[in-house]
Image (spheres, rainbow, N blue to C red):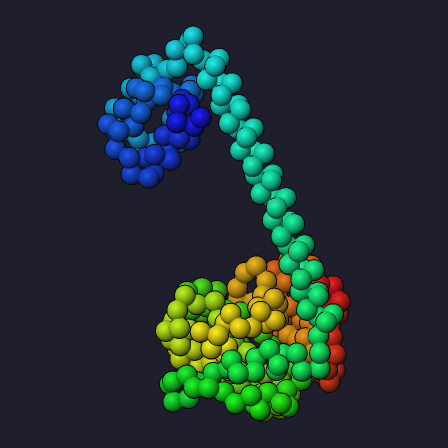
Amino acid sequence: MAATLPLTTSDISLMLRSGYSVPTIEAELATRHFADQLDEGKRNQLIRAGATTELLDAIESGNFSVPKDELEKSRRKMDEQAAERALMAERAKRNDTLYQNQLLKQRARVVAHGSADAIAGAAKGNLVRLQNGNLVSCYDEELAPKQIYGLYFSAHWCPPCRKFTPQLVAYYNQIAHDHPEFEIIFVSADKSAEDMATYMRESGMPWPAIEYGKLANVPALQKYAGRGIPDLVIVDASGKVLADSFVGGKYVGPGRVLDDLSAIFARGGGSPQVAANR
């Protein structure tokens, strides 16, 4: 339907911004015609998009106007298309809401069915860490004394992640000595193993990570991931969520999680109020 509809001011503005030449736009106008009345506001819109004086004069001359006998038919088609777009947008919004509800229920199931060593068990045999600039296998025994975990979903290609990660490294280095019961596990969303390794080296991640080639082996950890990154989720050894970058489906960010984690440490463990409001 869209290919036969007349062009609007917005259509032409988009074509200009996308690099279409004036002759190409005029050829489209000759075939599809122009549906708008070019008032001052719409003229300025086209000028801002890069329209030439010649193009504006050609449009204002009326040479590209929709013929009167086709005008009503074209308007009906445009109204139908607008209604169809609105319906599709509403369906997409509804589907996204359903997806988020399913995701929250899925993450709740992970918590409800956790075991005493759920996190260590899920990570077992899948961990690597930096050593002399290289990624080496991490001994599963290192997780034995851990009681609180930070699952860090992040990627090198993500600018907000690269901005937050140094803050997380500094926080970790500050509290790690006094809280040996705590560990972070990096769950990469990078596009390759080399990207992940580069990210870990550049940021100096002092914590273990799930080996890139084994990310598919840890669905029990991946289920904690929210819809965006950087995403930091604090869980206890059984998998119970103590703090989350997403609260009630709303992104509050990993900085908020660090505040919650500090509160957990100050109380000697347990869930902050935010966890109850997920």
